[in-house]
Picture (cartoon, rainbow over the protein chains, first blue to last red):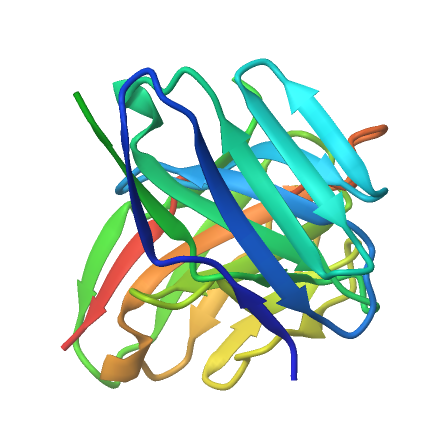
Length: 109
Length: 114
């Protein structure tokens, strides 16, 4: 079966750095997405990786290793507004997104 | 403002009733999707449409139907609601040029079936 694994919850301190990991086992691979979802709101797109390596976008970076079935989202200079759930999704061979259950990130002052 | 709208925002429904959730996008995206999101689970695809006039079944299609008469609208119908359909429903669309077919989400409909 297809599976996306992420930690359920993480806690970090304002101003610090946090890394959220995602491992996947899917039938085919056509890219990996990270989304942010604040409580009670819709998911919003953060990043996309299709080739191995690091993609940097401001305070957020996303890394992919296709051979290891692994990605991480790195958040730097954490702000209180970064408190949210972070969703990892892989596009499979049918070009459909398979979603992880999300990682709830709690930022403490 | 460009984007996706959903209606209603929330609804409480008696079991056995019929309900249609509405979704409209103005981005001229070809593909549209319906997901449900339940606590502790990832988003699960209910139905999708790659282009107007076509639809397909996702991971959890039972009890739901969709239609895609035009590019903009993609309604989701629950023919006879059951309590297990209590969930938050998100509509999404994709098809922008040069954005890796990223999916963009509507604000969601919170549905409670009693």
